[in-house]
Length: 545
Image 1: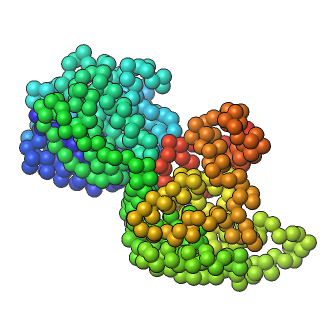
Image 2: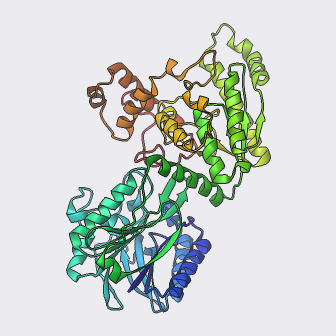
Image 3: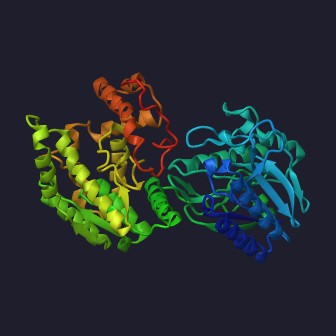
C-alpha cells in the first residue's frame, strides 16, 4: 500500500482555495499511484476557524468541499479533516471529524475524542467529544484514524482526559495509524511532538503517519514537520518545516524501518523561519504587500525590519527614521546603514518641530509641572501618528517593534510605539532579540554591530538607558520567563536567588499593565506561553498589584 501525506498551507474560510489545493494534491498522488492521501485537521476550513463555526453557511460550505473531494476519491482514498454535524440534539452541534472518502463515497467518519481547551485551544466551545472508536478497512488494511490531541493521552497518563482513543482501537488490530493534526509552532514543540508520536508507536508497535498543518493564521504559526514513524519507534522521515510538501511512502518499507531523516532544530533558525512565515502569511492572506517600520537604530526595530525584508522583499519594507533632539547621531547612522544593507527604502522625518508644537500647545495647561513621562510619551505618539499617516496614505501596514519584555512590564506607549497591524517580536524577550540578531548576522553583518552592542535606550530624554527604570534584561527576562511561561509563584522565583524587591516590582508591573496588552496588535507566537489568545488575565485583578 502506498500512502501520500500532504502538508499544506490552508487559509481559514477560503473554501475555494483550500479545496483546490487538495484536489491538485489528490491528482498528484494519483499520478504516483498512491492508494491513500491524507490531509491535516480541519483542512477544509483552515485551523482554527473559531466562531466562524457558529454560522450555518460556514458549515454548509465545508460540506460542499467534502462533496467535491468525495467526487475526486475514485481510484484513491482521501482522508481529510472537516467539521461535521452532530445529529443528537444533546451536546454541541458539531464534531471535529476525519472523513475517509473512497470509491466516490464517504466510507467512514471518525470524530475527535480529546478536545484541547487550554492555552490557545478552545475546542470544547464548538465540538462534541466522540465516544465511539472504529477502525476503517481499505484494500485489505485496517486503519486507526485519529485527530491531533487524540494521541496525546498515551495510556491515560494525561490528567486532562479520561480516555485514550488508541487504547480503544487497538483490539481491532489496526495495521497503521493516521493522525490528522493542527499543531502550532513553539520553539520547543517540534521535539515534544516527536516524543509523543514515538511514544505512541512504542506502545502499539504499528507505523504512524502524522500530518500537520503548515502556514500562519494571524498569531498562530504552524511549522509542518509531519512525521512517518516505523514500528520500531524510529523516525522514518520528517517533512520540512515551514514549507508545503507532498510525499508518498510504501507501507511495507516504512514497516521495515531505516531511512531516518529528521531535520535539525536550531532554536533561532526555527524562530527566524517561523517569524518570516508569520509575516508573509499575515500579509498574503489579508491581501497586503507593503510594510512600514519605524527604524530607530535600536535592536528591536532592526530585527523587525530584517525579518520583514526577508518575508516581503526589501523593496516592500519602507523604513521611517524619526529622530528627535534626544536621538544620538549613531542611532540615525545605524538605522540608515541597516536600511542600506538590506536595500530597503527609507525616509528621515525629524519630529523635533512637531514635538515642540505640542509642548507649546500644552504649556498653559502644564504650567508648573516638571518634565516627566508625559513629554517622553508625546514623542512616541508623534512617531506613531507619522507611521499611521504613511500607512493610510500609501497602504503600508505598520509593523509593531515591541518585544516581550517591554510588553510584559508595560515599557511602551499606547497609541505610540505600541501601534501597528502586527507585532513581529512581541513573543521574544529582549535577550532573545539580541540572540536572534546575532543569528541573522552569522554570515554577514546585516544588522550594524553597534546596534547589538550599545546599551538599550528609548532615547526619549538625555542619556536615557532602559536600565534606569528596569532591571538588567539578563535578570528581568529570567523572572518574566518563570512567571509567564512556567507560572511560578513569586516566592518560588525569589527562592531561585532573585532579589525580592525586584521580583515583586516586576510581577506587579506585569499584572497592572494587562490593559495595555489588550490594546496591542496580534503577536506572532513562538513560545509555549505568548501574550494574546493563550494567556487570559483580568485587567482589574488585584493579585500582586
